[in-house]
Image: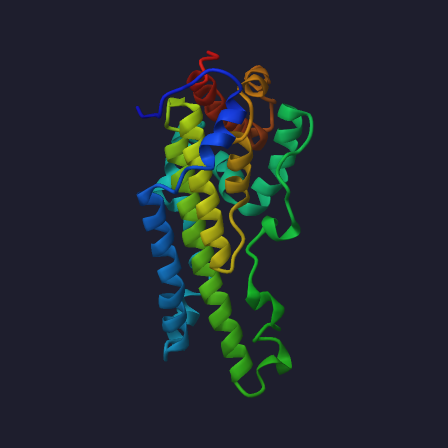
Length: 257
């Protein structure tokens, strides 16, 4: 397993904040970000070409792709291996509804700021009328523009969400997270969030939640390790178990376990 940096003593959250100020995103994270940004132009070029028949065939295909990606499969394996637990975290709407509940149970109140846009695929294309709706496509242009915007947004969101799953899977596989490791990951998560925003889509709310977790003091996390799972709430348990994996690795790094 991987141990990120060397742990120190004292107030870990202060250490993390001080360390973070002098850090840059890791090269592998910047490579991911640059690749995601390059895909914006490539997808827009494809969608703006004479590819309308292809768009019609591919429309809707991206929705279920993130859950089938290697990263989310890794997250699933770290949980209970059940499809419904994976969907609880991978699907934006369910994850956005879970996070305030779990954060409230763990910390006493929600930490992550969640907007209605975090609950689903937000798209510039949503501002347009449905191209299949009566007069929306009287000259053929506006409906095509809607289709192009919707297609590009759909696939960029799927790729971004698959990337978040990969980060979450690797993060939860780290057995020890020291203050320096947490500071580096906060820098990486912030960079990735900025890249996804620059793509014109909202980051997956789990990425925002991870940022809040990595910012916490170990003493807060120690108390959270004792919170029991709830029968008949597999969705609550899935996020709580994921969080408790991070809590344990951060407490080990702070020499609290």
